Length: 442
Image 1 (cartoon, one colour):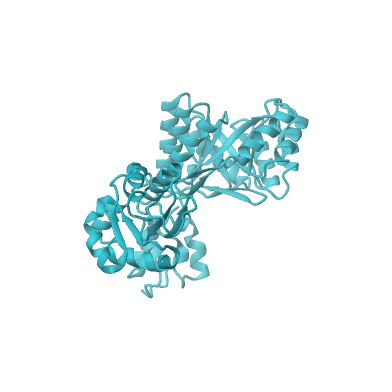
Image 2 (cartoon, rainbow, N blue to C red):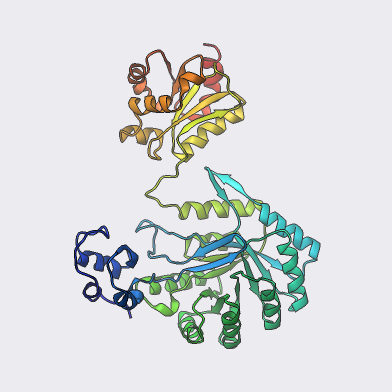
């Protein structure tokens, strides 16, 4: 049972040292009771109190990790229903279903495509997290062959699904020193699955079609010594899936119902299921088909939802050379907001025109927002020019400001005597035309 703020306060040192970041121990205790801070933030709590506070300080949704050689995917540990309340921390793991009935050469080709798939999205590398082996042949030798084929080209974390416990045992024997997920346990077979999960130190997936059944199963499984569990809601349709996912999340967070305080897993056959699972609380997704054109929007959606809305996506400030610029080529200026940077960089690179791109530190804000907030002004631009040692790199000192902040041109001229300050277009898409008609002519 979770402790109240006052109960937690009585177990704290009550020194009001402020080293936890709060003015009093009572304030810290209230935050701890609300699951908004970690107990480790208090440097002076006694070992005896730590033991008593573990229940209250533990996140309402258990942290689950799947590990393999050099890879780890973490899910769970979430503390809010909606990301604007705080943020979501651990992105749902995306796994691709691979059937044991596939020929070995096809398994290798598919696993290699999954392993090699990477795409750059505003400076962030998006990729699939792992492979789920589906023992549709119900044959231990088939699962062994499939696993070895996958592992010959891909080392990412693994899930194993079978109704045949011999198949799972055979598969697990091939995954030494790894932490895979196995499934799915239900009301009939949970005991044997729990014994196997405990023996192999694997995460256990449990399937049910209502919350009460999950609570009953997880309590039994926990009593067998298996702590790491993932819930698989057996929804009849999209609407039922949404209801189950929301009920599980709400009961775990709002009612602190520990028996359902675990991440969930969703098997997805189409994009509608994928999008709903990403948006509504899934910890893992197993997608039925791997196609680049389907996976990319899924990963972008995941990235957007699991990006802290209070922290803009940023690129490293500095000087970027595009299309091998020469000392006579112009210097374009922008901010370090990722979308702004890539909008400008992609237009210049795609046009084949050489230029230097000077990215000023605007704390991750876009051009107009940064200017309005006083984070993108003549002083910062001049500082960026000097930090990049531009005077040593260019023979013709031309600096092109974004058109949205044309008002800064006079101030930048005053900060950078000897530089020719030009005002570029307001939109990145117009940069190539401006370059050809203005910069190449003058």
